[in-house]
Length: 321
Ligand SMILES: [Zn+2]
Image (tube, rainbow, N blue to C red; front, side):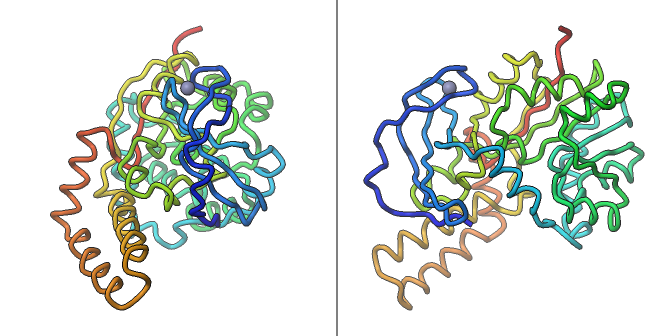
């Protein structure tokens, strides 16, 4: 876990970074700084002045990534039934754009719960995941085959195998070389295949609200945090046509946006009143107001309408070369 630091010295200073959307080195403003206990280093988040993408500086190295993701734990173990609505929410949106059942894959599939949902509805599925623990869980509990192979290597070893659908659900923001991955995905997709990318939104209210307290940024694990427009731009530049896009509904999201609001208010209260019974009591009352279902729906709806949702999804098709 990364620990947020509240040293504002580095915030609002300029730093240089490579923007994968603009394909150039940019000078942006540092909007967040984190001291990572895991890597023993400080990481900054810049916003590209051209496209608005959030960029983590420095980026994790391939070695860091391999070490970290090989040991990743299973998320959502035993929660398939409980989280069914979420899996349905993604499945039901995508399927009308596909030619019906086919072959689906997910990169960074973790427990493979989402792939199980597709599999139970007649899709052939394959997961990609480095973590041995996740691979074993996916097979044993969800009956989903998961490979630990890198996609580029898989393409080289199985040029005959293509997919009608490729899912990246909160994975793409972890990728340090997104253009190269999009090229590999293009190769792995059937000519009329679809790519579903769901990522956190750097333009969201969660970022706005949390600011320096933000743990949604998850530096340095999130290499690039896109806006809906910047991801669209990246996909188009890398030879994809955008088929559909939508803000991710908070109703199915488990309340990331509302949790951010709760946290943000709690931190601000504590800063103002100290950590005591009064700030805790006010925090609890606010929490229940925010969690009150109609209020949660309202916050979510407004966020979606204003492009401020906590995350969003884009469905794209590779264009012929
Ligand atoms: Zn940019």
